[in-house]
Length: 218
Image (cartoon, rainbow, N blue to C red; front, side, top):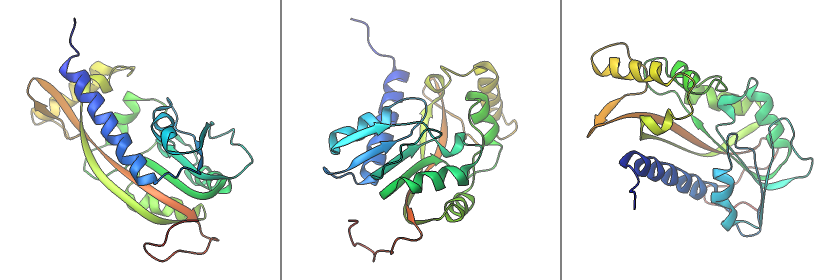
């Protein structure tokens, strides 16, 4: 029987670990009705479904009118032309917790450009300070956040890229001392890997009374 490649296994492990960490951060409850607007697939919705009463998916421009006790969005900010408006709209349908997950700029190099080459729908990668400002200007306050860096194999990530060869050349060139891409490429065994920095936010509307540290949400 054919065996899965090491790249496929590495990618699957990185993806499942990332989703487990995001689900843990979201703190789903059995009585939650969750709205997920994650673009490009239902991975987060599928991961969180066993832990809540129900999950409904929607697109950013077609949000339901009812309130949800948990609203989740992964990689929606980076694909939005108006991040403040998007967060504001999500807060309007949030009757409990809004959990956002997105890439964050933490290193030198134009990692925005690499992300856009890989996914033309991607618009911008902001710093943590800039993202916090977006949330504040949208009418939210950040109750918790989690920022971390993961390493991923390049080839599975490039599977759907319109210009994979260009990205691969730039990453290899950086290994040889060329311009920094912000992706921190390195070889692990015979595979080319790169790094992504992520941040998770748990956000609530400013108008809602703030809870003391450790006090559960109702």
